[in-house]
Image 1: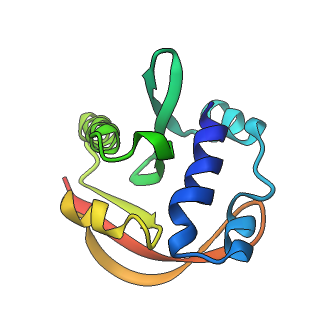
Image 2: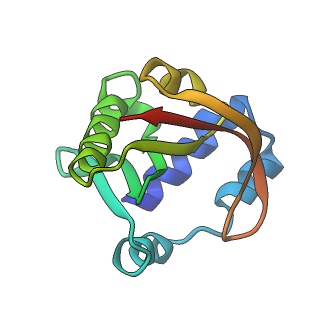
Length: 142
């Protein structure tokens, strides 16, 4: 379910800011087992949002970094992303993390800015599956 949300969100929501080639680099080689590895061996804390037993969003945190936050296209603008972000920030606070950092897609910069994240710099996000995309590195003091 997490894999499906990620892939459909990037393909549909991010297509306004990224080329088909960039989207392919972003999600083209991703497989469900990559998420399992991240959660079991990679040290990520992952939270999900469900509706009627279906995963409609997820977010991941590792140390002081939000590694991803995605909401399924049919469930946008209903507060799911905000609740996931609030939950991840709460986990970070419980762990005494003083600030969070993330690499935002161009699409999500307004969302993160509305929730107190500030631009640190613009750059490229490299993926373990190969390729890279333009992103905005952002931070927030907790």
